[in-house]
Image (cartoon, rainbow, N blue to C red; front, side, top):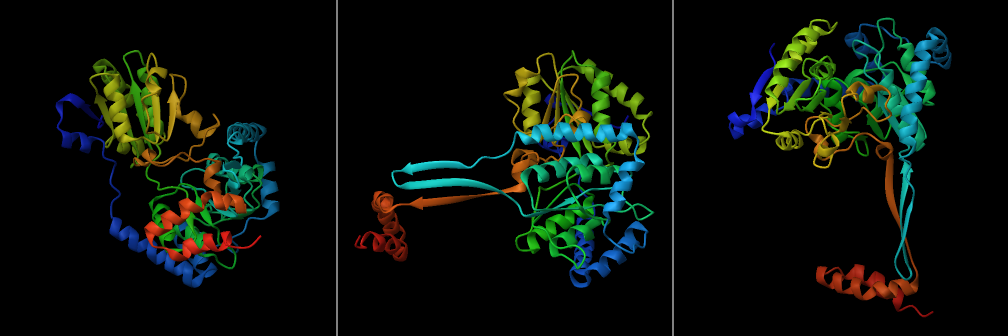
Length: 434
């Protein structure tokens, strides 16, 4: 077993920093150049570049980028009743939780004659990127599509890399239909993000793009958010990660299964266990070795375990401290009294409480969103919600009496800042004869 076992009391401050470091993304300079070249091609050549790059990277020569309504209907007929039921159940669960997030306008009369309002409005057009590496991801369609649907975005565009037959998975199309998405394109990679940012003849540009992807997609999102005026992305994204806090009462087999459920995402994923029990660390290490051998993606999971950690802490308080420092994407608490730790745990994308709350439930059907900040961004960025598909703006309305009530304050402050025109915009109104 390649997973490192670390005693937190026995290492230096620098070693602690190193122990919590994420796996570095290699070849950053080369990656940046490659993605910049792809973006430039799409910007200059539009659809022509999309067809060329799809053939180059996906090995398929497409005749069209659009998915038709007929193809979506055929997808529904192609799935078993059991598969359709599962997708519908997940949709209902996610919709139920996200429906409670609907924002209401806030109105405040800050002083007599001064009325201020905070309004919330859906972003007009959004793009949803759905990865399609080794398997289709209808769950991600639902996690992105449901909040876009509930927020009321006027235009929702879904992009996803095609398979070797130039098609999208039936599950992806069915999930898109549930979310009311009718604009679907068979395009992936950095070129898909470039198309959504700049627009092409086939794919009009959107205001904001959402969704996970490989390092090329992530780099494209980063570059384009800095290049294209008014174009935004959901959040910085990195490889998947999970941190488990457990005590001596925890089930080692459960913990190993949770760690491996993230390790199988990719060789650059990272999983961490924090516990005050040496026996548990030994049991989890043994379970990892047993369970990883049974996985279809065992080679990927084994690679991920090389940059993962089993950390022995002095007590649960120190485990909480280390977790807050790391700021995991997913945080699982498997202790005798998990609620006792919740008040002190701050930095996590999503928290899973108790022995029977696997991270897999949040990935698919508990109702919470699985698009979460990674690489420590949980300290400053929230899990995806309706708020991400909205923009907030303020409205104010002031009567002449209200302006008079504020005038002394405004005049004094404009004097302090030397902004005469600002001051005159107030006094000229108050001088007006009624």
